[in-house]
Image (tube, rainbow, N blue to C red):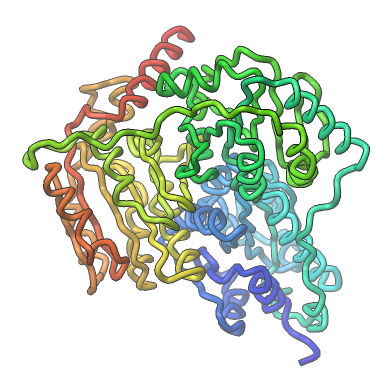
Length: 564
């Protein structure tokens, strides 16, 4: 085989970087491209219910496997995906967005085609996407097309940001040399400038040497930019107390003896707040300092000795070192820090959460009890996905087993994100290890935005746990404003009928309303094996919420009132 089509070349390249499930929807400008998926062994076309859900699914898949791909059609399809793509951009998730666009000749003639604005401008949607993409490509020349595809894949993977790739319908069937596939795409990071890196490392070592009470704080980009291993080694070598943010949950093993809890500014537990804010040095790995990630920007560090490690720069106190990547800087630091910390005397870290006290099995469920109890249900290796709302806040109170991956869209916060993300994560988990469990916690209101994607899970025989928290509407909104407002109400659904409605044959459904019912289910050996798709409806009081969400809502309402 000396030549292959450009379309097949794209999917062969994606397969080489272990992107094996492609999300999206068919449309007449991408149909010929989609034919080529089936020519590559091991590739799967997910076939989503709509483009927004497909973008959410691509996001969830990329968080587990490093990058993903969504394919939409020109105009109507690509625009429907953009909310999801924007979330991936905000939260550093590598999604390749491939758009099937009209043929080169149609564009040149400015034909009044369907899916256009009727003004002959074929680049308008590309320009929209450029603002939420790390880079873009609009292929017009078959000679340079393979190199453009390679560049887009590399950029998606290395920067962990979305990339837009427009492929004209007439080019995907043209032939390119198959030998180009013999040279793997270079996914390695370029080395740091040696002098700048040395200055960073030496400065950090001096700060560590002088510190009496240092802490490590891991955030979202520790996971996204693949420095979890380096962060763990830093904790192991230094023995400094280590904390995570809500976005960083899962980036540090929570069973580690030096793990101290989740820091969310004023919303933190008192002992965590005191431990972090009294530090005289903070080593912050992969920070994303959004309002809900920081307790409405309520970080109150007493020290100015803050080192921020980022994917493409380092900040030390007020000095910024652009282009110095944290991956290499941390590795260099690890090779030298042991000697500097040899006299450090480890201080106690805040205690792990205490188990729920024994209670009568008929006790109605409350959020505080549930989120504490969830930690006993989780297993090592689980993927835990929590929806914007009570779940995203409640999970901060859950103590994870080791190697648990948390997905929570704390920065972008698009309601309904997690149904699609659960599909994507379940596809990725299945490819990595069929026994890996994927567990979704979503509110009854959020579920109604993206519920169709459960049908795609059923289509592919995926086996996630779907915990639907039924508190009769938008509790997070009610806490912020409008407790009794009609706009925070939803039409109640028969949620447990959804699985058979979407065609599930092998499934289980449960409704739990008391602590006894929860414990009986969570402790059932068969239930703990991901042998089939399951939905559990968890009945909760309308205004019941995790304590840190109540505090966040009060903060948000107070800030909004001051700005009016």
